[in-house]
Length: 265
Image 1 (tube, rainbow, N blue to C red):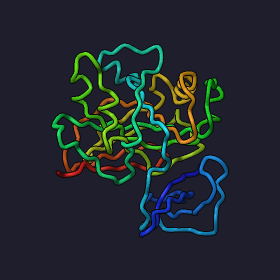
Image 2: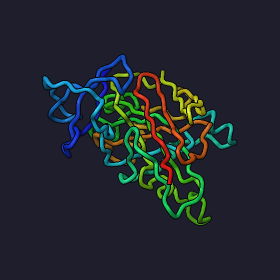
Image 3: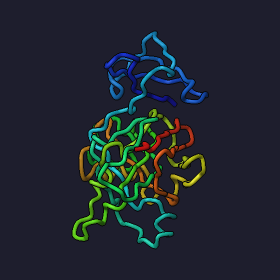
């Protein structure tokens, strides 16, 4: 297992990346600075930095972020929704990406509900097109925590056109990180989302209708997936509106937790 982050040093605009230590809380870890490419031959240097004092960025910059809808069996059944025959998904644009500890911001004009959705994120590691489910793991670089923030009231505002992209792609609405964890079995993971310190979501990845490997395989038949692309696997029951000043933390076994706070306007 390895964990990777992207960062900037104080007073620097240069984006760097490296492998972080394990076994301690994220804020107390150290970073072995690397050179080269995260997805194609990272080379460790002799330099080791404390995470404290670094600006932690999103651990990759996806060319596209894909989100699954209605992909947790228990949540779909609780809402009385049918089980889909194929993945139902939407796209989130790159302007929405938000790193660990970044602030979620409400658009000035929007006064409707904004909800959190804690999810497992799959990070693609190699160019991926028409791959089988059996081979999908070879194209996955690793996994990260995602908070798929949504302006819920916008989706059905216009009865003639469901506005998924708009509701999902506002600035700061795509939180993920802080690191990417490799060499982990996603089927054994549990997603837990805490709102203001209280557990609100608690569901197993084994309860997904389409597993991470199935998702990668099926999406690759629709479109080419590229290194760094991010897939959010869908969320379970327990989503709530986010109030100003409140904190949402997504915890997944073996992954560094993601925490973000809604800005107070």
